[in-house]
Image (cartoon, rainbow, N blue to C red):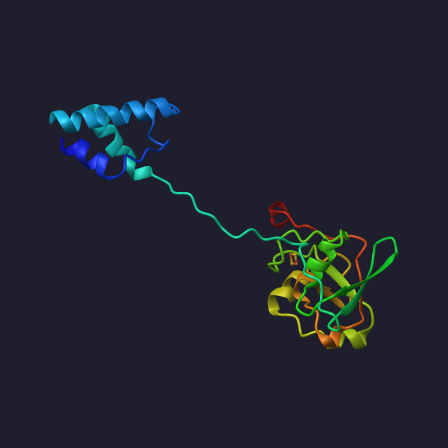
Length: 193
Ligand code: FES
């Protein structure tokens, strides 16, 4: 009876890991009925004990916020910042964006070819961009050590290279022009073997 009471008080949680075969709703219901019957009759049964043993591997579901690149809100009137992307085939695309937007999000929102393999967490170099003009390059806040480490791995590194996900638009960067490199390098684990 103790087994059955314990199983029932735990909410009769059922898990897969210890089950000898894939449980179905019917089998779970049957197991619960047996445990209930055991509790009522005062006997301990294998079904009640089985549920108790399965408690140790109960897993719960969790949710996390979905990261959505390419979902930018437009700038307020009078607060537009202009940025021009020069694509791999030498096409110039000028966009009006708002302060705080980073170049990865802007590029992806406009279907430009910028991969952003790490989702903007400064852990790859697939958002490599080349800033046109040293004067403008100097207006961008200094890269962090992490960004410099990733830039070292970028294909076709230049003196004015940056990672797009780490560059955020600001009033100083109004009129920024960046070039997308002809190739990016998406490193795999085997590259370090
Ligand atoms: S998206 Fe990976 S470093 Fe920018």
